[in-house]
Structure formats: C-alpha cells, structure tokens
Image (tube, rainbow, N blue to C red; front, side, top):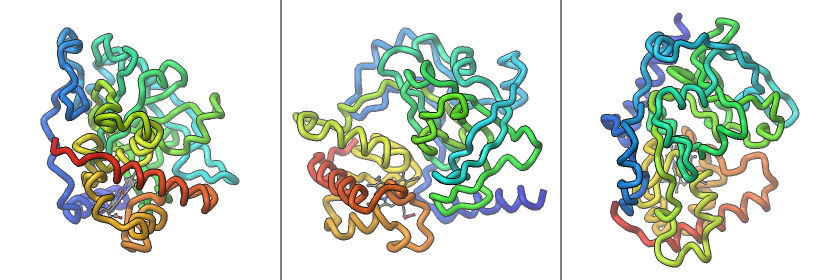
Length: 297
Ligand code: HEC
C-alpha cells in the first residue's frame, strides 16, 4: 500500500514537473492521424470506436470474458543475458479490439494507438495483432503490485495500470529482439487511426528518406512530434529542434541524454548496439529531421 501511494505521488509529482504534459483531450474515437487532413470520408462509415478504456470491472462486464494468465519475458526487466519471466492477467488484445472497435479497425494501413496517462503513444500496426498474440493485462498473476522498473528510462516502481499491452514472446521468440517497443503501459485510451507516413514525408522527401521517417516514427515519435504527428510525452517538433541544434548537440542528446540532463527520462538511442551503429543511426535521423520542412499543424 505504502509502495502504491509512493508511486502515485511520484507520478503526480512527475506530471507537475512536466508542464509540457498537456491535459488529456476528450477522446475523439477515430481520427486520421495526420496534419495533412487525410480524407476522413473512408472512415466516416465506421461507427464511433472506443477511446477511453473503462475501468477493469466495467471492461470485464463489457467483454463477458474470463481474464486469463499469460507468461512473458518481461522486456523492461530483461537484458540479453538475463531474462525475467512474469505472469500477467488479462484478455487477448485482438478480442478486446474486436469487441470495442468497429470491424474497420483491421483494415490494411490501420494502426492502433495506445495512449498512456502521461501522453506517451505507442502505435501498433494492425498486422501485428494478426501475426502475434498480444494481451491487454491489468494485474500480475502472483498478486504482486502491478508495477515494473524501467531501466532504460531511469524510472523505478513504474505503475503499469490501468492497462498494459504485453506480447507472448515465450511462444514467438522473435518478439524478444524488439525489446519494449510495443509494450505500452499506463494505457487508458486506445484509438484506431489511419497511419500516414505522408505526414512525415511531405513533397518528394519519400524518395530519399522513407526509411529514416519510419525509423524516426518507431524510435522517437512515441514521445516527440514531427509537424504535429506523434506523442505528447514531450511534444517538441523534432523537425524544428534538429534545425536549431548542431550535430554535436543533437548527437549528445540522442546517444547520452543523461549527459545533457542527469534526470533525463529519454531512453538512449539503441542502447544495446555498438557505438558505431548508434552513431550512424543518430546521423541518419539528424539528416532526415534537418531535411523535413517545418509545417505548422
Ligand atoms: C520515451 C520517450 C522518448 C523517446 C522515445 C525519445 N525521447 Fe527525446 N526526449 C524525451 C524527454 C522526456 C525529453 C526532455 C528532456 C529529458 O528528459 O531528457 C527529450 C528531449 C529530447 C530533445 C531535446 C528537446 C528540447 O526541446 O530541448 C531532443 C532533440 C530529443 N529528445 C530527440 C529525440 C530523438 C531524435 C529521439 C529518437 C531517436 C528521441 N528523442 C526519443 C523523451 C523521449
């Protein structure tokens, strides 16, 4: 109990210390995630989709489905040499999505956004749900507090609730290499959105930077934005910021965020890769971000 309220206090404090954390917007349900204003028409036929997730008891009732236990290799607690397994309780994510969303959520090109209490957004392409087994969990099977340590982000006793998306990486071992990329926690909202890399590749940029735009989306835009597209944890426009920063300063921020700010919660880029790989990746992202025109959403 003491631990739980401590974690809550830390979270409240964290939010207070983060003036850029915007107040939650009233859920819109289905949105086209692009400042280009991707035609809303193809989606207008869909009934409204669930956005803010109901509390566990209400969701249980809504799904009319007994929660089950799933054992996973917990990526936040595992390193390449030491894997920690944990068991969680929840429902298959594909079933939750099927019951809460209109059928269109599965269409090609759709992405499910898992939005966390602090504005972090994890975007999961729908194909992934067909290929692997994900679970939306709300408790630990052993009754221990529903929290984890996030080594990469320098945070202890991180509350996982209300919901946490986990993947059966025991059954599909290739998921282990993705680390915690698609494991959003503190999820309180889900949205089905139309993915659009066009938002990140205006004009003819796609011919030169298609891969870099995708990498930026995967590695940076859970927290940051490019021209209004991205997360709200630290919604700075990287297209603008990269133009303000020298290569040396950008590199330092991205490779060693704690050298810039000792309290940084930004994960260092590709922390487990060799220095040369990390350096090259930082340079590719920098060149791309410098090339993207800054457009006010
Ligand atoms: C998990 C969230 C998260 C991810 C992912 C992330 N950052 Fe950050 N970033 C932050 C936070 C929070 C800050 C604010 C300062 C701090 O905590 O270091 C920040 C600060 C920055 C800054 C300085 C911004 C400013 O206005 O001074 C830059 C530049 C930056 N990040 C670039 C990147 C790039 C490029 C990537 C992808 C390779 C990335 N970040 C990935 C959370 C994140």
